[in-house]
Structure formats: C-alpha cells, structure tokens
Length: 88
Image (cartoon, rainbow, N blue to C red; front, side, top):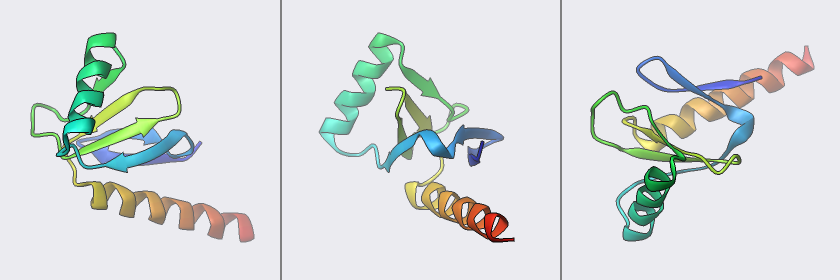
C-alpha cells in the first residue's frame, strides 16, 4: 500500500485518492459541509485552515492544511518511486 503525506504526520492511501482540490468554490464547500453532516469528513488540518480537499473512493472527504499542489506533487513523487522500484 502506497501512502501520501498530507501534512502534520497524516497520510492517506494513494490508491484510494480520486481527486485533490481547493476548498474555495461554493460547490466544494457544500460537498464538505454535507460530508461533515453525514460523518464522512476526516479533518487532518490539526486546527489550521483547510487548503486542500481530498476525495477518496470510499466516499470520504479528507481535509488537509497543505496546498493541493503540494499534495499532488508528493503523490507524483510516490508514484514515480513505486514505478522505479517495480522496474528494478
């Protein structure tokens, strides 16, 4: 299982990520609010401002205080390492 660091010692499974998006738009804010109401939101911000929303294939929403570009970059690096390991 490949894990992606989403900040402050928190990680999510790379295989289960559907999207990494910014929380600024109204539709995403509604999506997050609905997930919180239904108990599907996982807050990994450690009390900081939410800067990335990670949508998982399990219908969970993970909130991170790390920029979406940073999370995506870490995801790409992890995938590249996995591919390199498989080649060797």
